Structures are given as structure tokens and as C-alpha cells.
Amino acid sequence: MENKQVKKAIVFGGGGQVGLAWLTGLVSQFLEDGVQLENADLIIGTSAGSQMGAELALGIIDLKNPPTAPAAYINFNYSPSDAFTQLYPLLAQAAESPTPESIRKVIGKNALEAHTMSEEQALQRVDILNGYAWPKNFKATTVSATTGIFYLWDKDSNIELKIGVASSRALPGVFPPVTINDGRYVDGGVQSMVNADLAIGNDFVIVVSCFSLDVSSNNTAQDILNKGILSEIELLRKNGSEVKVITPNTEFLALTKNGADMLDLSLIPEAWRIGKEQATNEKKDLEETWYH
Image 1 (cartoon, rainbow, N blue to C red):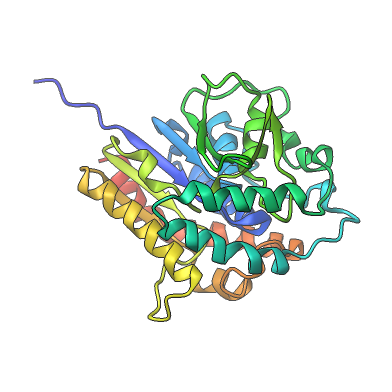
Image 2 (cartoon, rainbow, N blue to C red):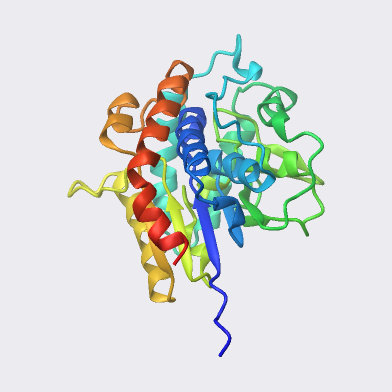
């Protein structure tokens, strides 16, 4: 009897520029160690994870050097803490609402009205993707700023790869919504910071979150959002997927003040180093499942 082909997927969650550095360190070390993540049947990315997913699918990850801060950040003054203060309660409301699109429309309206860098400047953050065609195994998440409806871009969406990834990375209040055709689009994390359930139908799924998924008894906005992500992972398992979840180690959580400093560009080199070290510790467990 012919063996059934095992379908494998990777889901990368959002985490700002510092989360992207950690992801880059993590994935580059896995690749250096011979774990062939690029062979995944499906790669899904949200926000910073969309950049990571695209680079992995294209095979353009720098294995030896940490990423550098995009030139677009230079001389631009933003206050991510203020943006997060406004954003997180709305994200939590949407997560618990029977009509989440209505709340996401509010988030989108706020994003359209926010003082940010220009859209042209923001697109420079994904210049590494210039000229590349859309990889057949890669999908990126985004949300319409005007309707609150969730979208999943892929090779059949008839949009440029760079633009699709930029829309997935358009953190409301920090970066401007991205123009695609007649619409404006914001960060895929407005629906979920991970969107793990989009990998349903695959036999083995690696889910990588740039944030801790711990849930306290305080029922904070972050607790609510983490419960939603854990429900996505549980749904994967209920639908027959074997799931490997990777979250940051204690060193990364200390570096970023438990995720509060994910836009502090000075942390990029250290975040990358921590990612590479963590991959070394995760390698054996990952290999046993990726190749089984």
C-alpha cells in the first residue's frame, strides 16, 4: 500500500520588528542545522510573521547576520505604547464579540486617522521582497480598514507580494493602512496575532508565536487574546493535526519586557541571537516530528 503523503504547515505570528528578529534567528538556525522548513506545504504569516513566511518560502533568509532596522524608521517619531494602549482593548472586544467586524471597523477608522509615517515610507520596510513573485505555498493575513473583513492573500490574489506582506504588517496606529486596488488594509493581527486555525487540514503544523501564550487569572486584554490563540491551536488538534508550538524563552521575554518593547529597534541584534540559541534547544524535538 502506498504511504499517505504527510502535509506540513508552518504558522508565524506577529511581533513587530523585534519579534521578526527573533523569528529570523530561530528559523535561520533551523535551516543551518538542516531542518528543511522551506519544504512546508503551507506557510502562513501574520504581521511580522508574514515577512518571515515570505522570506522562508523564497529562500532569501540571511543565515549569518541579524536583520537591520529598516531605513523607514529613521527620524520618525512614533509612540507604540500609546498605540497599543488603545488597540489591545479593542482587539479583546473583537475577540469576544459575535460581530467582530464592527469593532475591527473602529480599529481601521482609527488607523486611517492616525498620524504615522507615509505609506511610501512604510513600504520600504519590505523592500527585500522587491521583484519576487508570490511563492505558491505562502499566504499572508490582513484585514480591511473600512469593512473589518479578514482576508488571506496568496498567489491567486492578483496583488504584488511586497504589497500583500506590507498590508499584513500595517500595525494600526503605528503604520498606515496599505492601499490595494480600491481598499485600505491593516495588520492581520487585528483578527488574531497568530491565526493558527488557518492551517487546518495539514497533518503536522508548527505554530510560532512571538509572544508568551500564558493566561493569567486577571482576564486582561492579553489574556483574552491568548485564549483565542490557544483555541485556534486546540481546533487544529481536534481536526487531526499534530501541533508543535514554539513560544519565546524566558530570556527573550525579559529582553522585551514580556512583549512590551517589540518595536525597540536597539533590541534587534540580541533578539536574533536569542532566537538562534533557542532553535538549537528546539531542534531535536522539531526534527523528530518534522521528518516522521
